[in-house]
Amino acid sequence: MIVSIHQPNYMPWLGYFYKIANSDKFVILDTVQYVKGTVANRNKIKGINGEEILLSVPVKLSEGAYQHYNEIAIDYSHKWVNKHLNQIKNSYLKAPNFKIIYPEFEIILKKKYENIAQLNIEIINWVIAKLEIKTKIFVTSGFEKDFGTSNAQNINICKHLNGNKYLSGHGAKKYNDPELYNQNMIELIYSDYQSNPYQQINGDFLPNLSILDVLMNISIVEIKEMLNING
Image 1 (cartoon, rainbow, N blue to C red):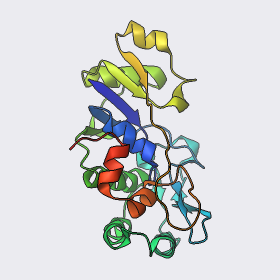
Image 2: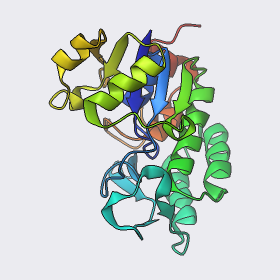
Image 3: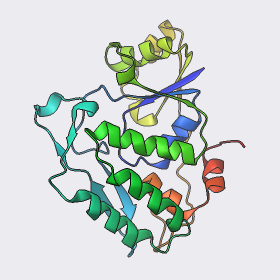
């Protein structure tokens, strides 16, 4: 039983969904400290001239630096929703899947959310449904249980879900304690995702953009092949 865990990022990249698709159970970690200036509330798309465009959701840090993802309010005093939608429309109007993807994403973005976790989870669940990923999804705020922090948190979540393998991203390698996982009889494994080029509009290929770029440019069948999703 493979378990993977990740914070709810804004419009995550394809590697995020690769980890979900290659797990039996995926846990959205919305009860950990929000980190300012990260993909927690921002991500990149490809502009009409082939440039990277960073889309950021403004948030309110009223309680300082120690708020959790599900405590970070979105700042709707800024007109960011229309700005994001206009930039997405301008960038992908000529993309093969624009007429399908844009209206669906527009509906999501035009809803109002209490916090950044709610918005991000709505987008993540939408993508999971589009790609027909069968992995069971959990959100830590729904457990109403303290799993601890760092390696202990991941191990305790795996145990809670009867997982015997923990699928980690390579970015967490320097933080992982292999011996601790071994002591708890949980096999620590790493994602083998490769960021391979796909057909993009607007010039030369740019890697590691938001999942929105992938959805706009190539078919669901092609994306599922990239994620090793069968059927």
